[in-house]
Amino acid sequence: MQQKPTAPNSVWRIPSDELPAEFLPDDGCLSHGLPVTLGHGQSKIFKLDRDLSYIETQYSPKRNLAVLSRMDTQQPRMVVTLGLKGRSRFATNQHDGVVFKQGYTTITTFNSSDGYREYEGDQPVTQLRFSMNQDWLERHFGVGVFSGIFQDKSMRVISHQPISAATIIAARSLLGNSVAVKARPLFRQGQAMAILASELSHLLGGDRQRSARITQRDRQIADLARDILSAEFKSPPSVEELCRRVGTNQFKLKQLFHQCFSTTPYGLLLDIRMEKAYQLLKSSHCPVGIAAESVGYQHASNFSAAFAKYFGFPPKQLCRRE
Image 1 (spheres, rainbow, N blue to C red):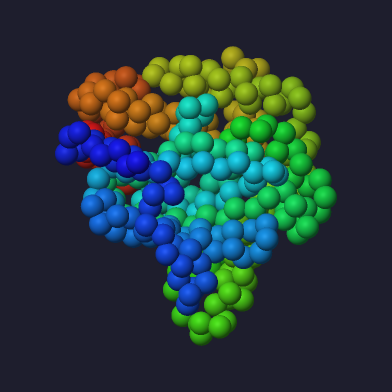
Image 2: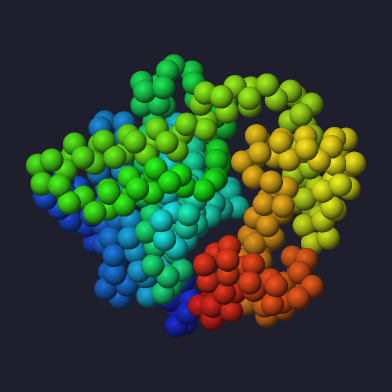
């Protein structure tokens, strides 16, 4: 049953199977819409083949919304999520959560998932997701090519990086889909394959070969540097000091962060700070100044600017919604 909020700005929680559903014959898909009391928009689910699904979500919720999602699969699955507008977050009891934000492609893997997809009130969201199993990946890329990324059965973030220009063009074509009705399945299949080829390419070929050359010692250095930033995000060491502590130089450390985490030391530090601040503001309703100080910002104005650039809305707006 839908859990109604007890206050005007609290979170609406609803199981995904309670969202109004209908079959759209022209598109050949199942659509789950938002109840009018929660906002407007829909999530369309297309079955492109037996092992590949495409989900097109466009929501404009009136309130903070959390949609319960459960999935158990016989095979591990990979999900490629394109954030075209706004942001959302998926969280489980076993995982701190994954943020899907505008302008980025996030690649995750899982065997089963049981958690909430969270959407901000009054913030339109447009996301495209492509969900495929290991059979599909091996059929198109070769047996064993992606086997290493499925070793962990829990949800795992494989990659988080800016959407490529080619993918943005294909995604806009998918959303427009102005071809004749009978040609839409073929058009949709073609655009989906182009997007996946573009967004998965960095996990293959030269990038994959360079990743394979990372030694065990290199990986230990990268993980140690990440752990230091995670533990000391409020007063982090400089890159120079971080290099001294992990036993490498700045060029090597930046190279390892790119290869292992698809970001820079500063980029990872920003991710940590913003996620900590988001959770603090959401759970405790504390003033923005206190949240800023808690994650290492001396000036609340600098924190607010960084938060707004990262999430697409100011921290005060999050406080008002909660």
